[in-house]
Length: 142
Image 1 (cartoon, rainbow, N blue to C red):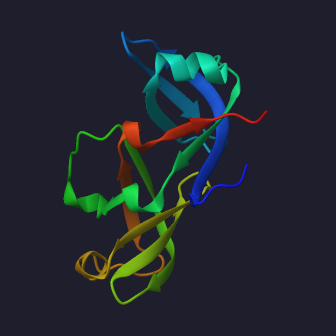
Image 2 (image 1 turned 135 degrees about the vertical axis):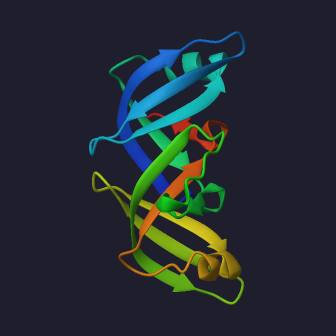
């Protein structure tokens, strides 16, 4: 599958929590991280999601929020992944930040240049990435 989204993770469906309209889908990644998605019940059925089945978690880079892990920030986001900055590509307006997650996966975030400077981002620096469960697109390979 080709998409414009930079972050595409393949994992196993660890849990499906049915709701009235939406389901919560937990996808376990091989490195030990977990991504939670909220999708409609119809999408769960149309994708044929089952516990133990393979699924893709897709997150667009601009949907990722970064913070210093020592800042003690608590957010209402379901997804919180820790790692270290592995590459920075500063631009005039935005900076692309590549993060090597604990567990080995890579995650890319696009933040404003001002935010990157405010976080004092540098290669090797510890960082935490947040994104909402509703910003996770779930897919399957056919």
